[in-house]
View 1 (spheres, one colour):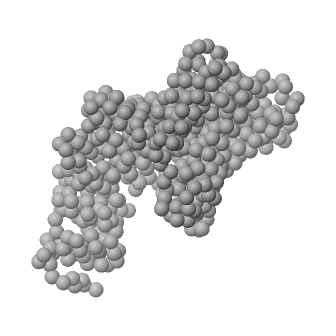
View 2 (cartoon, helix red, strand yellow; view 1 turned 90 degrees about the vertical axis):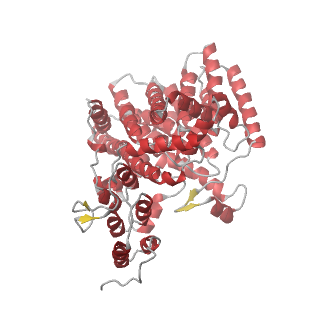
View 3 (cartoon, one colour; view 1 turned 120 degrees about the vertical axis):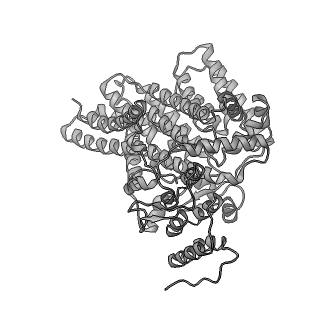
Length: 447
Length: 144
């Protein structure tokens, strides 16, 4: 899966919007440290991300496309590798459940943003990697280096993106669930670091809370949101938090917009929406049943991985709630990507639980039919992820055409963008005319 | 054999096999079918809102004023200039791009394009054509 998505990423030209100014800036920056410090005091405050962008630019030796794509692919491999390593695969049933979980992880709407955007380095994918690393550290046997690694990944995550605080959530939730990999002392240190980060971030640096977002069947611009809901905590913030949580559990709303409602109003609900919702509803129900069984005392005493399952469910719940709260200003599926990864992790336990518990013939046949349907729908969503990349490649390729009249004034910037443009235009993309009409109706698209 | 386990594994394995096929084809130097498009003429690229391909073809030496063949399903005509194709396909942005990339209109071609745009009735395409009206062009009178 990583290989095929990596191939797709290589076929997608570099992004122009939001990305090209960052590449030009990296070209102008005198060094990695200068790029790192340039972010201090800014609205975004993503110094490590800027330093990565500069470092990759310098290491590229002129092959900018390859350098950024290779890093994106490396992050993707790391995320998929850490995810698979987090699954407890010991039996044939575990293997079947893990294949399902992998489909959920890659096919999820929260995963789409991890591959379709790169500005020029995807900023959410490192957070997913850090959160999965935090889960592994929590689970591991305690050692001094585990504590050190926990603190380091927390610092790296926060210097990459605000969502980096999810690393703290994963570590603390793991501890509450009884995992002892990271010591209490280290957790206190991480908590202190988080308090410092939040104080600095929220009081000393301007926070970007003005962004377009969905509301029911509409997509509202920042100005429209202010006009309709006013400033401060409002119905809108509560809506975006709930919408973000629902987007993980039910694949709706998308970026805050209930796209199915919008499609229904337009008189045409394409199959992809039914596929997304049906696959997520079945999976969420299976997780819910497993969690309910888990909460009943005495019924699962013989289950060897009961504690692991319980801990993963607690970590997922914590990450889901925290990611939802982090989306208070605007809803965006990719903000929920760490929660989406943990959703896939608990989907493993949900399916595994269903597989090992079903005994009677009638129930076995019914369960087989339900799981066949759910797994088939998720398989369509996995293949659909490649369709999203294919469509994205065409859109980005077109964006480069118009760059000819918007080249930077300075000679170095002019030369750099001209070279990047020629390189991007030379990359073959698939015109949608060659793609069967049904593909856009069955496979997911960029909302 | 655990029937539900088999049922859950098979579709997921199909998805993994699809991914494997993409990687396998790429490793042996083939373009995976899923990623296979096809070559477009400049007129086809103009009709199919393929700005990237329009720019690439022109910068690779294609004549923006030449006449090109079109596949039967693209437009109702089998040959057209890129500008004609863009107008017939109601692509004002492609008209703009073609003009920036070196397409030129004289009085006669402008009249023809303007009449096609009139027939299509797309306001922004008419505006795009009007923006490049030659100074010598007379009032528009299209055959009914």
